[in-house]
Length: 327
Image (cartoon, rainbow, N blue to C red):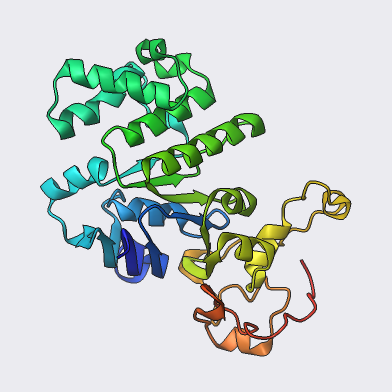
């Protein structure tokens, strides 16, 4: 049984004629102990999906479908049950720790708050738990008395991870957890997340625009474009031999160590994802696709088998992709 199962999730902002689709019929599952990465450019619906999992979207959002956490539908939960699930069942590490932490409270107080609310423990026991958590994420215990502005970016992100672990959740959702960090600190944070997930047998859903980071951290990858999953499968398969041209473009956008050709001439993708309020007909990727054919303009594509445990939504699945016209 999956720990998390998302079925036909749809999220729109606004109502009536002004409703804008942000997530369009997403199906995903995360098994206990599994690490699932979600990749895509900004504007493809990744963060909306992450926030929808715990119903953290603004009031203007309308959700439909099912989000099953341990078999219980998050979208059908009453507020009391939802508040309990948000820390103890699943927690989230937001991007931009400085904006997520309260600037006028010491970080130790912020880590202990969910412990006191959800476990009913004493302040002394919560304080001991805070020290344990800081040690887990590689921070000195004395940092509990610091304010967020007194910490470096990497230290603040470690505090966010400690908060996410505070109530022993079974699932952590990490939304761009290394945004704005330099590459050395980014590598440390990623290794820390990977280590903690393995040690505590936690499931991880990690979001990033960097396919290489996700391939190195996660077991499986899902690639989103224009609010939909266009490819999903084993991480190394999707990264190394994507069946959808968008997955191929994401993988090719970053130069690879030791590959002189990719370093001197990194390949990108022209244009931007479409405006959700004005999606093109047919396959939404076809205006940017280097291998689009006439059928792509007329027919939307659905996920079909592209190998063992691998699916892609492309007319070319099952056949060799034709020579790219442009990238």
